[in-house]
Image 1 (tube, rainbow, N blue to C red):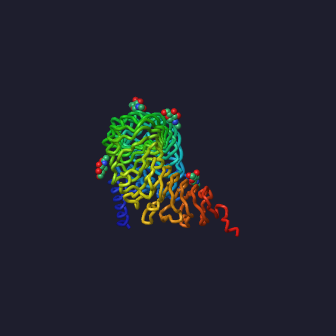
Image 2: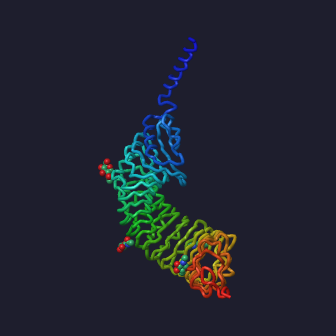
Image 3: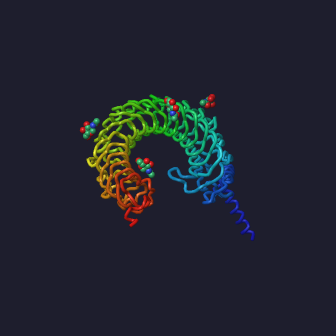
Length: 484
Ligand SMILES: *[C@@H]1O[C@H](CO)[C@@H](O)[C@H](O)[C@H]1NC(C)=O
Ligand SMILES: *[C@@H]1O[C@H](CO)[C@@H](O)[C@H](O)[C@H]1NC(C)=O
Ligand SMILES: *[C@@H]1O[C@H](CO)[C@@H](O)[C@H](O)[C@H]1NC(C)=O
Ligand SMILES: *[C@@H]1O[C@H](CO)[C@@H](O)[C@H](O)[C@H]1NC(C)=O
């Protein structure tokens, strides 16, 4: 009895001793961290997939789902959601301000939780070690705090994209001098781009697309020698492309300014952006000629200059390897033919040359590698002939549009490859009957041609067959012979 008792005392002493070796305890985390996380959990009103089911009081919070510790067992990262894809779960609720207890937090990631609401989490301003904030694809709303510049001086990444933030981008953001990545895209932000962003010399990514920002693009890029991605598309920006963009030559890979109200000419210094991979100037009011020097941009894989007021000639641009998508549609180009450099480019996936003044016969167009093409739009030109050679079974064509041309061929003999989903041949001179193979298409438009005969059974509305010579049968009126 006596020896057993002292043995128990020995065990107890050993446990206490081992406990002292690891004063923060191997089995429980810091009480502040636990309390902060449990308060966050209690702010979540719905967690139907049990994302937070491992978060139970008295267990080591460092082992909870999405919680990571360092610095002697303090929580340094809270990460719910997936940086790369869609988080497959939904969490509803608000973000508890008690998360400010996580004083060692360096990374805060709530990505694609979908139903997280409430204002900008002010407690983030009280976390001195934050390096990364990712609050993307939630439903946060209201203004960004005017003192957002008092976030941790260590902050490198600020991602607030795809929420519902309103109001202006606070000018104090220029005080976040360690910032490298800023994503404010797809919110409801208004006002102009604060020029102070030009002080942020370490910037690598600025993504402000999909807001209602207005005014000119400030001329602030001179010192941003590391900027790789500048995305300002889908706003209400006006004025010209600022000259300091030229300074980004050594670094800029993505320049996306589409769907704004920008004007002036495409600056010739654009050719100095030697690393450019994507150039999107679409749907603005850019005018004048395209600088010859553009042809020096041989790394570009995606160029979209569509829907501007640009004029011919488009420079000869040798892009045999890299170009994947090209859209020059709806400018004032008169190309006469599809340019030879397009035809010889070997990996073009998407080619859009609508209303480019092309007058050739499609039967004469022999692109280098038609099997690679998935999207072609040659609408609103004066193209004759037949697309027959482009619609091959071995290819990957999904969408072919050539409405408003002078195509003249027998529709009944046109091969419709299985890969094809969309076919728009409206407003041409196509004759013959409609083959049964159109049934497999998702979108079809054959209106205003010279087609004739009984339609195959499809679910397309009558409008896609309207204005032909003598088509009949559902969804158009029955054929004469059907009365008999
Ligand atoms: C940046 O921080 C300094 C010092 O705290 C402050 O005086 C200044 O007003 C801040 N700048 C902006 C634009 O808020
Ligand atoms: C575009 O900018 C011009 C001035 O450059 C202005 O007159 C026009 O109203 C703007 N359009 C839109 C839609 O904002
Ligand atoms: C484009 O490439 C072809 C053949 O590689 C060459 O003959 C032509 O001079 C090049 N054109 C330009 C503008 O670089
Ligand atoms: C079909 O084409 C005609 C003429 O181009 C156009 O007016 C009509 O809106 C199109 N219909 C559909 C369903 O796309």
